[in-house]
Amino acid sequence: MDNSYKLKIANFYKKHRRMPTYQEIMGLVGFKSKNAVYKLVNRLQDENFLRKDKRGFLIPYKLYGEIPFVGLVEAGFPSPAEDELSDTMSLDDYLIKNKEATYIMRAKGDSMVDAGIVDGDMLLVERVSEAKAGEIVIALVDGDRTMKYLRQRSGKYYLEPANKKYKPIVPEGELKIEAVVIAVIRKY
Picture 1: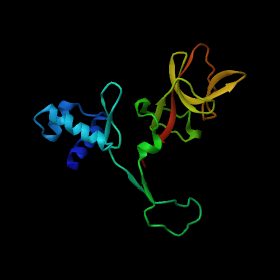
Picture 2 (picture 1 turned 45 degrees about the horizontal axis):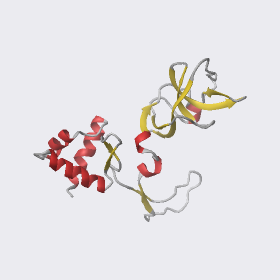
Picture 3 (picture 1 turned 180 degrees about the horizontal axis):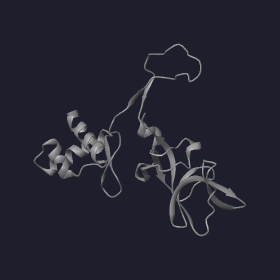
């Protein structure tokens, strides 16, 4: 298959933060019919480049392919370099268990700095209805959305920031868990 199709779709996704529609793919790759796009989409699904969600919408799967995994690097004292390729890995496979329930949010504020999450970080989160105490969650508490550690004391749940400047949040009414943070993405 012509890799320029994949590149055009990946660039569209990068620019618009969504997958193109069949009509937009027609224009991107220069096809004259939606049937040709349908066949292309089927081939791209077979190659695990993209998938369809439960509603039939296109979702990215391995847009950027696999990345070489070349080994370990010491964070302490220097060690001899290993230049040989150990393996490859897909960040999708490594980070995402449930593609349909996974999305990205941007962190705002400084209440989770001691957990390594700073203002502007991108968060990879998985939609859940329940979480375990100790996990970093996205929650609705008394109608407001926040990100904190989920904690439990005396059988009751509360939210704890990772910054001593802030106090734990004990819900007066409803505490609804929306998602669990599974990764933090930061560009340097």
